[in-house]
Amino acid sequence: MEPGEANTLFYKRSHFVTRLPLSRLYSPSHYWLVEHSGVWRIGLTKFATRMLGEIVDYGFDIQPNAAVKPGQALGWIEGFKAVSDVFCVVDGEFVGMNTQLTQNPEVIDRDCYGDGWLYEASGKPDANCVDAPGYKALLDATIDKLVEKQQPAE
Figure (tube, helix red, strand yellow):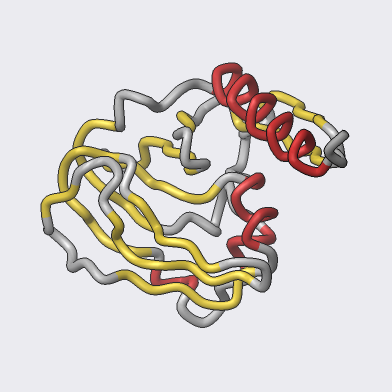
């Protein structure tokens, strides 16, 4: 978490607990966005990292300065539990990836809202992005569906 970012929204549902930084926007695909030096810094939420499991590798298939749009696959990320595409949540231009993660992708797990960011892009956030209370409501619905699927059929 970035220095001075004490303003968080505590979240607990089922067996999942996290703190959502209030300074960020959140996408329905479980990415966070924060403006940093005139560009959007984007990373996975704690929920996304939990669903992937311990992060072991990732890569991008896009070059800096390429035009991007929300929903576009930019690369991939692999955890012990799953492999997923990395999606864009900004309409604009890809700036670059977090090169500090090349040697230590596990930073994504340890500090997903800080040093574990994935990429930067300039432009406008996806219109579906919401604030922390909005993401809390989205998490409630997502976790309720997961719990429902685990219930035995009658």
